[in-house]
Structures are given as C-alpha cells and as structure tokens.
Image: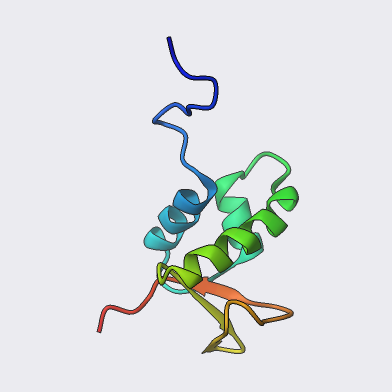
Length: 90
C-alpha cells in the first residue's frame, strides 16, 4: 500500500522541473518561459509565484543563479524582472 503523501516517480517536483527546463536551455530563462515549458497547455500563470519561491530556495542551495539586469542577484533581496540560470561550471 502506498503512503498518502508519496508521489509517483514520474512526477517531478517543481524544483526538479525548473532544473530540468534550465538544463535543456542554452542560457537563462524568465519565470514565464519556465512556467510555459512546465505547463504549455494549462494555467501556467499560476506557477509564477511558486517558481519564484522555488528559485529562491534553489539559489540559496547553490543549484541555480537568479539574474537581475544580467548580473547575479541576492536571492533573499531582489525585485522586478529576473531570469534564472544554472551555475557556471568554469
């Protein structure tokens, strides 16, 4: 018997979905671009705030970078238009 809060392995968490979309991108993406990639046919607008919260958590963990005006932003203190990208592997 499965546990009530367990997810099927085929279902990705929002954080995993964001990282998956970014891994297939050739640069940075905006939250709407990521939301549309995750839910192309559904109400992707409802994902915008959850994506922002997940992006902050991922940035604090060092798994992605939040960019504001082309420069890395403080994940705890940024406003306005932003883009997300994977950390550089230099």
